[in-house]
Amino acid sequence: MKVQTLAPPSPIAAIVSHIVVLESNSVFDEAVLPLIANGYPSVTFQLTDPSRILTGEKKSYPLVLYGQNTKPIQLHAAGEIAVIAYFLYPWLLPSLFGYSASELTDQGIDLSLCGPARESNLKEQLLNSPSREDRLRLMDDYILRLSRSRKIVTDERLPYAIRTIRQHRGTLLLGDLQKELFVTERTLQRLFGETVGLTPKLYSRICQFHAALNQLGCHGFSDMTQVAFDNGYADQSHLIRAFKEFTNLSPLEYRRLAQQFPA
Image (spheres, helix red, strand yellow):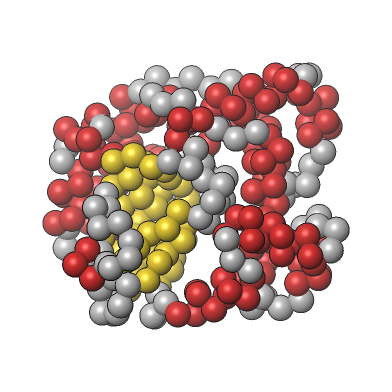
């Protein structure tokens, strides 16, 4: 499986944090591609062969808006695969799509039925595009049109809080953040609940886990103890518990699953 992480083009860089593209030209039996919690909602396009999917939901939507996920989203795929995910800054979700963030937590909706995506037949254009470059261009244009057609309303305390939590890889004491922002615990809870769809504590734990997951991937899942300490876990067993919570798998099971994907 070829996986690339791309920086968004400058016109949408204030909306999109990063873009992930997964591709495989191999014909193989059904596989499950997990979208692991990373603290970002996403607009995701998936191209696959539904006739080869036996255990998953056959009625899958090619173009989906996902809110925050606390459990892995399972994409059942087979045949030629293309997945393009645009990860959005969390504080923009309600302004861009008109949903309360809590409505979309651990949920996905068929985006092809909504607003500009429906009006431009985005799903059909993506499905009929001959190349990855064409699909990326269509997605870029969609995000840009959407941002220009919406009034972005953001409490500036929230972007600061989210960036600070991510910079500290989820280990920042929330009491310190509240003091820095001059807000109460209840106010911070409300800001996150309405706009992010998660509590500040859960969002921090997701950021902490994702930082550890990235480090494990870079080191081939070796030295779990050091990775645990580097990312604020008391010991290796606490990291393994977090791993099972957010992936439903042990680190070894996750690594084995990843190795099954064809190149």
